[in-house]
Image (cartoon, rainbow, N blue to C red; front, top):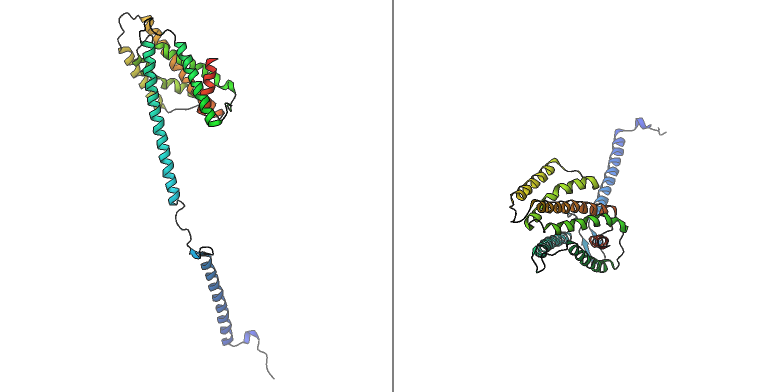
Length: 277
C-alpha cells in the first residue's frame, strides 16, 4: 500500500525543482517587462512616410525658433534706432525753428504771441493724431473718459507757453540746458501722483545735475540793456515750463496705468483737443 508523503517529508530534490520553476517564471516576467519598456522607448514607425521617426531628444529650441527670436531682436533694434533718430531729428528741428521764430527781429519786432505758437502746435498735433487713429483703429473713439486728459492738457499748455515765452528773456542755450533740472520735479511728481520710490543715489545725481545747470545760468553774462526784472521773468517762465512739464508726463503715466487700452495717438488726440478748447 502506497504511503502518502506529507509536504514536510517531501524529498529535497522536489523542493529544489519547485524553487527553480518559480525562479524561471519570475525571470521570464522580468524579461517581458523589459521588452515592453524597450518598445515604449523605441522610435515609432510613421505609416505615411514609411520610415522610423526618431524621438526628439534635442532641446526645446529648434533652429526655426532660434531664427525667429533673432528676427524679433533685429526688429526691436531697428524700431529702437528709428525712435532714437526720430526723436533727435524732431527735437533738433523743433528747437531750431522755435529759437528762430521767437528770437528773430522782424520788421515789426519780435514774434509777439507765444499763445499763437502753442495753438498752432496743438492744431497740427490733433490732425496728425486723427490720421494715425484712423489708420490704426479705424475710429476716433478713445477707451478712456475724455475728462481724464484735462489735467495734463492744462499743464502741457502752460509748459509750452512758458517754454516759448522764456525765449523773450533768456538765451536758447540756457532754456535748453534748464531742461536737465527737470529730473527733481519729475521725481517729486512721480512720488506724489504714482507712489514711485527712488534710491538715495538718484536724488544725489538729480541735485548734482541741477547744481551744474545753476552754475551755468549764473555764469552767463547779461546782454547790454537787459535788466534784472526781465531776467527774473525769464527764470520764472523756465520754472513754469519745467514744473508743468513734470506734472504732464507723470499724469500721462497715471492715465496709461488706469486705462491700458489707450495708446500714444489717442493720448495725443485727447490732450491736444482739450488744449484748444
